[in-house]
Length: 277
Ligand code: SAM
Image 1 (cartoon, rainbow, N blue to C red):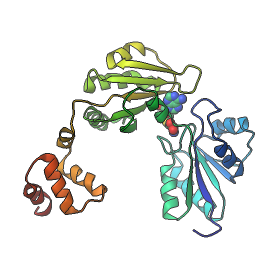
Image 2: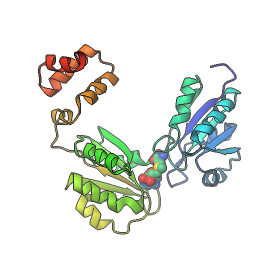
Image 3: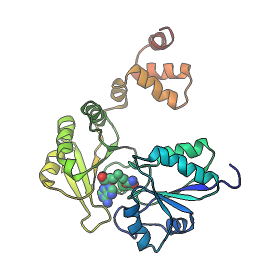
């Protein structure tokens, strides 16, 4: 990092109520040279509300790769840039990951400016277990990938968080019903807005209560209490099980020992599968 290089600020913006922006976020938006926004017209409303006038460039899913290169060049000549999305925290079901990876590669400083995020606010008011949770974001649309994800949700012994669009919520709830049967669900709608509400019940009750539902939605699904760690491991292929521990930094020897313990089999059996193939 040379002295001239700029900084990329990842700035959270409101998810509805325009007051939900921190003083630090406002100051950063005022101070940077450039704001990269998912939808410049949408973000202009927020910036006008905050009396901030700054050069805005678009940075969205469809121009992420080309715009990343342009923004990296700007950062390298010393410009400070704020990345914002339409709502909430960039990078959470929103663009951000690509430029952040590139900044890390290029040794450019990245600074998070915390703030609103729909999934966290839905989770904290859900009344479901907040100690451990899995954020899925939007379910895949491709049938095979979707079913695999639903299977993962079925077997998860952690609270699950999903994002969904109102016009797809009915079919998503039906899919959840097929896989999870009567699990408790909390549907958090229009968070921080006038019509904010939390609808709670089992999947059938939620289906009944959400006919023609509108607005933005987060679904929080109760964890599977009937699954223990061993059952969860049984659902992993040996390769995935191996990768899981590899990612956690265990050595080959330790991984084999751990898998043997999880699956309750002799470690030589696992050893043969991985080492003596
Ligand atoms: N980056 C955002 C965040 O930090 O939450 C999420 C962006 S994602 C493209 C948009 C989805 O987030 C919506 O479809 C909805 O599921 C959820 N969402 C965003 N704002 C919300 C709100 N005010 N109430 C409920 N859900 C919201």
